[in-house]
Length: 344
Length: 252
Image (cartoon, rainbow over the protein chains, first blue to last red):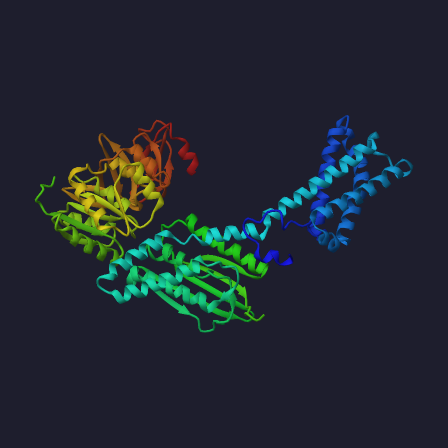
């Protein structure tokens, strides 16, 4: 069952939920903040007057803090064991543990600390469980929101969005060739088929960058079919490490953007420059295109850029970077990713 | 109006050469049942308008997405002609335009175009009324880049960037550039709506280009607010009305 994560599908729901890693500083901090916020809210409600809120909070915290810290320590220490017995079992164990700590505190409290404002044992246990449930519920929701399954579903939805504009215009261009230049029409349809094969594939794993470059070339061949000499492309792949593995469809959407925003609106067309180069342990992909004066960066462009940024983050976390700038009337986008090979 | 046996004079406007070639092929196939002649081809809206100034055209096959002046803007200029040709829009995919056309009952053809659809659209130009300027304005989602002046059957384009101010006079609007003045038959209110980014109203009858404001002058004559806009380039002074006095504060 451990392999389940690798084939996680979109309809995965509760199966993959686990306790968060309570040894993680961020998780601890979130727990502390959330529990204390709940205690503060309780203090506000319970305090008979405004100036006793602080006192009420101290009393609640004096009781709540030990339970919280003991729970966090136990959750961190017993992390592996708790994960092994599953989510429900882990929660049950946590409840028993907290019941123990709470009872101990409640028994001992009369001697060395005040019971929070004459609460009964039942009330104290209820508050403990209630706060625990809210905290765990929060982490559950957070995990769902950030789960790779959700991110992946979004990626696939975005990937499917090659511009329909391109598809129909390409088909139109091929139609115009069939009567006069059947050979070129065949070639164009082959390129189109290759392109859509990649677009429709489940692009989960990394692919060699040489294939990405080839795909972008096929795409540009189709575009030059309809744009003619308005589209000029310069490739610089002299130092490209052909075996570098990159997320699929990282280059083509950028090239498509460059054509749509940089070339099509220009009467005389323009030049797209694409550089793929090795920089020590990194691979740099850089693309520049002319920027027509009156163009607004449209939602479509931002979506493509955000999509690529999100995928880079998912594949490399902080080790990849993406930046764009406008200089001398040209738009430049640069991506740097770690140089990984299939074997590594 | 065309008589049945007349030959329809057609202009093809599309920035992509294969798309134009395809339309030529299709029009050839239509020729038997719909006598036609291809007058010329244009690669953008500006070229299309130039052809119209030169040639007698009955039908324009107009691509929407073209560089410089797109099909939408070209159509709005064409609609201002005294005897405008029929327009058949063509587009590969433009969800906004398609929705706008549906709403405003403007006919269009989706690429790749089928010969049957093209023939039907050609036949329709004989019977159906041409889309009105209002419908085209409503369907457009961005302001024009030019104003069109119609003089003796010719379309003269005035780039909006050259316009200093627009002033309503009786049924016309005077368009002032550094070099000269033009008259256009449009409403100042509509112009204000369309170009609200670039122009600001300073008086009931006057819109000034924001970029043409070089300063404000106090104690101006015939100005009920006492203020006047000084126009860049010409030094002309336009009165600011009391109602639009806030404009002065906004720019100072």
